[in-house]
Amino acid sequence: MKLVRYGGYKIGLIDDTSVKDISDLAGATADEWPPVAMNRLIRDFGVLRPEIEKARSRSGTPFKDVKLMTPIPWPNKVIAYPVNYHDHGAEMGAGYRANTQGFFLKPSSSLSGASEPIVLPAVTGRRIDHECELAIVIGKEGRDVPRERWRDYVFGYSCLIDVSVRGKEERVARKAADTFCPVGPWIVTADEIADPANLRGRLWVNDELRQDANTRDWVLDLPGMIEMASAIMTLYPGDIIAAGTPAGVGPIKAGDKVRIHFEQVGEMTIDVVQGKTGSGSIFKNPPE
Ligand code: MN
Image (cartoon, rainbow, N blue to C red):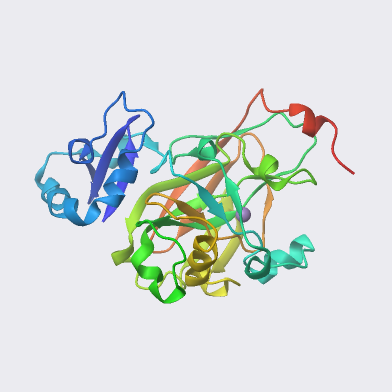
């Protein structure tokens, strides 16, 4: 099953080439704040699934006509594993790997959707890169999850671009700008992915292939990512894990189109535009 957020606040089910509105089943309303209807749907999915399946008989809107928002706009956290492919570690000159270094967090406010652009902050002269990553959506609350039980905690998967300003500032400051975490185009539920550790993921900029790798080359595997994060923090339904990027990261600039594709998961193409804000004091005076 593929689930989307679209049209500002609605939650939908992808049914062939159309979107069936299931906002009523998810309790999604235009004035909901914070917007956590998808988090609740994920938590209650076992109970709701039969009703959601029945919604296939509803009339729909052509998928091509809807504005796709980020599937989970208000997760408790986005957990991101840096350097989780050896070839990316080599290209960055990094001696550490995710299995020893751990993870960082991206703010929920950095999330954007498949129909929304990446807005570059006005950090003149700084390199801003794409990072092609699989998004793992947590389905169940858990702490100290043993690696053998990882499947119980995964709700689904999506495509994620971890946009990053290169430099020596704190990692979070370089990766937290609004729109620096496009996720989409939908969530595909875990039952449709037999082996998340065997998915080819690719990223193009203006049809030039920049990244091409398989999740089998993760340094820290998915059970390990869940075990490591949940040893430190409680995982909640709707939490997102950015699983790390392979080699081939490179700069994006205004006017570019960035396409990300994970087999069995989906594909989206994101416009890159120049914003006026975000130069910030830390980027004006880079640390040594
Ligand atoms: Mn990354």
